[in-house]
Length: 267
Image 1 (spheres, rainbow, N blue to C red):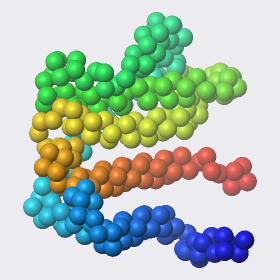
Image 2: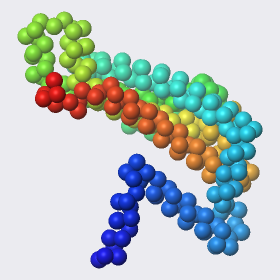
Image 3: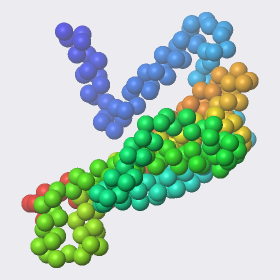
Image 4: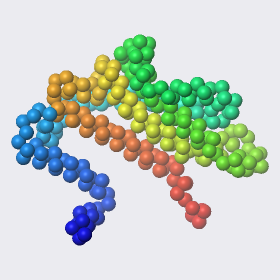
């Protein structure tokens, strides 16, 4: 029993802010040992040092920044377009019963279609360039924002609206001072999911509509030339960018919705 508690005790001695690095460090160590001591000559099993050297080469040549900026540019445009339309449609469905009856069945049918099923049609409409990729990314952003906006507005307690009527709030005052704060957590959940989906959709669009620059195209180049170190470096970049985007949005949500953590005693 004491031997079982040894790893736990060692883990607890690690500073809290560094505990998230324990598992990646162990994976890296096992990977290095498997390559250096395993005696494998397979090109599929490259060392962490080879991946690092490939990455430094990508950075020094500027290829990483070209690919990354192209991917982030597509993601940003798709995110802005898709989430903006999604907020408008979700607000309409959540605020108007008439709009829900009219538009809701069509929307709930379209959301069941796999996102990648739209690729052939988008490529026929927009070609294989950035327009098709941005349209695909915008669709990825659209659906989670609509759903969470709709649920956020419909989840506003009726008592809040009754209080607004008692104080004779206008429609704008009700939206700004009652509905928006109550629905904000759900709205941020939709935005966060949308951001995650748009990054994944950006990579998918670059992989399936293989034209131009991008991180997805970097992965394709590594696969076609059998450069496993380039493929693994691309995977690491994808993970780090996704982590950074999620962290930034979580920090923004924590700052803007700090009032949720306050109690009545703090006022």
